[in-house]
Length: 148
Image (tube, rainbow, N blue to C red; front, side, top):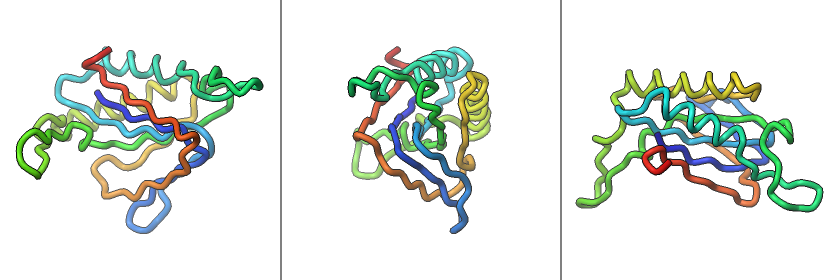
C-alpha cells in the first residue's frame, strides 16, 4: 500500500458538483492499493498514521498525534499512486490493485482507522472526485509498505 499523508487545516471532496465529505484540521490521505496488500499492510499503516506526531505542541515542536488535537481524516482512494513512468510518457497502472480487491482493502483500512477512535471520512471508490485542501505547513509524508 502507498499512502500520501498531508496535514491540513481543512479538506473536502466533491463528486458530480456536490460536496460529498469534508473535514476540519487533520489529515488528507491519498490511498493506493496493489494486489499483494492485505491485513498486514493495513495494521502497519493504521499504527503509523494514528501515532504519527506531526502536530505542534505548545513549544512549536511537531510532537502531537492526531488524537491529541481532535483531528479528522479524509481518506481518498488513489490508484495512480502505483503509476509506472519508466517507459514513454504515458504512465502504466498495471501495478495498481484489481478494483474489487483494492476497494475491499481500502474500506478495511478506513474501518481500521475508525476503530482507533478517529473520525474517518472518505471519498467514493472509483468516482471522479475533486479534492480540495488547505495544506498545513505544508507537511506531506509518504508511506509505502514495501519499505516498512
